[in-house]
Image 1 (cartoon, helix red, strand yellow):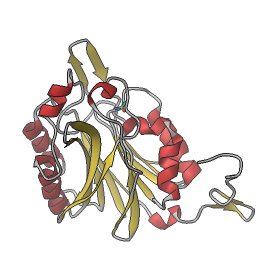
Image 2 (cartoon, protein in one colour):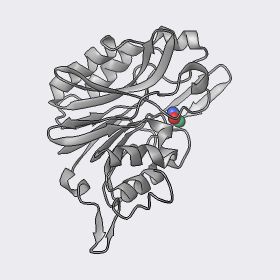
Image 3 (cartoon, helix red, strand yellow):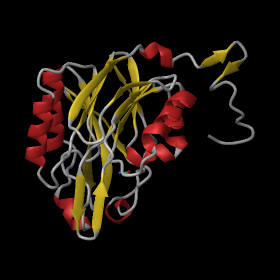
Image 4 (cartoon, protein in one colour):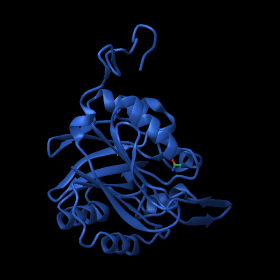
Length: 261
Ligand code: ACM
């Protein structure tokens, strides 16, 4: 299976322009799974819930149509972040889409910083979806610092974690090595680059998007400030066997009597 990511710097509020940049970066690329950053079409530094709402979508609007288009061109399943609206609530969500339409949506469980002012925290158990026989789960950005997120997906059978991100702290790429090692899963962290200065906010995003292997190997790593598409070939079966040696198994050795999750 070929996993890939798109790293670029979205322009705040310019969905069409951001779609065109992603489309151009992906020209000629084929993969099984392509992950785009968190909120890849809208930008990040919202100044009010009203502003975030003005860029929000219900399920089958322009971002899902764009991802469906990209999925068709790249013969891939595509995951990307968007602002999901349900009644008066907004969620920082990611959708998984193929050429036939939406496969699933994940609502970010752990909101970062002022996201708490605009978004409601995710209210659904993270699900795992089957793509070409491979189990894939989604988490978003700051979910990395809560090991329960990745563990929950891995316990639900995920072999690959799609991880759209707008990272500003310096530790996530390293932490994803541990997330993959402790759960024996693959992960695709698709981060954005660039700087957003809006109102009193000033965010510099860290790039260094990464495909991480089940032994913590970095299989693909982007620069900290250059747009790019990178891919890595993996054998998803490596994520199915959790044994460490004849005596140890990452999941069977868990001591559930003494902790939950
Ligand atoms: C983040 O969760 N966007 C840092």
